[in-house]
Image 1: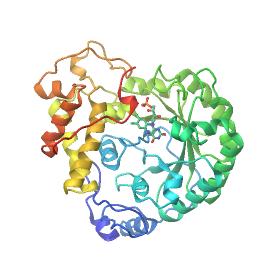
Image 2: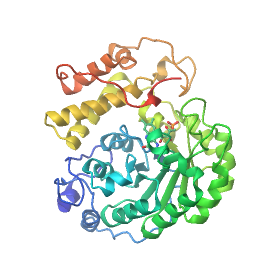
Image 3: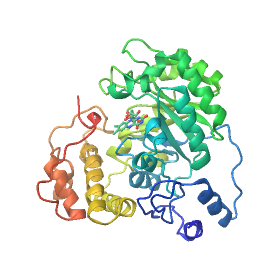
Length: 408
Ligand SMILES: Cc1cc2nc3c(=O)[nH]c(=O)nc-3n(C[C@H](O)[C@H](O)[C@H](O)COP(=O)(O)O)c2cc1C
């Protein structure tokens, strides 16, 4: 299996993946280009004449562009698209520790890495030191990743009320036990993603960061908003700047509202070690290229359709090309389209750059496809999906999942 993986064309833009399989238990077959288990990854490196990695405690990703973990939307096919456009670091969608420990295959599938993902981590959510540590131990034995991240930014009630996600920012003793416990069993660096705090006017991050550093966390990403705030108001980059000092010498990545190379430049001026990009990548995955090349890219609607076409072909490889795989690919495409429609083409802007929190007035695109792609209606997203995947089944309906795809 690994030999076939090694023979696969190198992924510097257009590699491929396949299969729907899970992890080591052998329940579902792992197809060639997934490098899911440690053994597969080491065989792959050996075939390429590279050494097995030794224990790493530091994560050297300073100055790199980090594609945020994105539940539902940050699936493997989408991450492949972002890698092609220059994302340096990628992370799997948040996986719930208890689901992993129960052996839920759908949860294990979230940990899959594509071979183009050369710096890849997985993100865990949990509330208790024993389950988190057990889970870290299991992952350490079974999956090949460059880092493990704890989601201490998750705002959703279901997680928060159980004491996980953001709630850990107020449960220091438990948080410390989780970090120390996981660190003890992991051979790769442990990172943490946090918010400014829970309530809007009570910043906690600056007090927490020195603790995290002392507990042995390799890197923290700070989303510059509180739980209460969700996506209302802009991320507080002034506060992020203050936190850089509090975290030092531990690297701090900043996160929030980056949609242009100017935004990224401003963010880097705060002294952060790097930036994480979430919705910006969903609106325009070519943002990574724009940042690296310091330019605005007036991408055409047909180029954008080509990106969607590549996504669907990666999706069919990943989820299968049978009816079920096609409909799964369509659902994930539609989730993505609910964000993509917010992109306003550079050539139509009166003032550059577009800002993530500004709702553009209704506009006509420069061609039919550009207008269709700007539509906020689910029916029009479905039409785009039909161009790529054929007609939807009878009685098909679609509702976007994430609140962040709407304007406030
Ligand atoms: C669709 C969607 C899914 C998300 N899923 C996760 C997740 O699984 N884990 C996480 O830490 N953050 C998640 N987030 C939050 C983002 O990683 C990021 O912190 C937030 O969107 C702010 O960054 P932005 O302003 O660049 O969008 C998600 C955000 C969106 C829009």
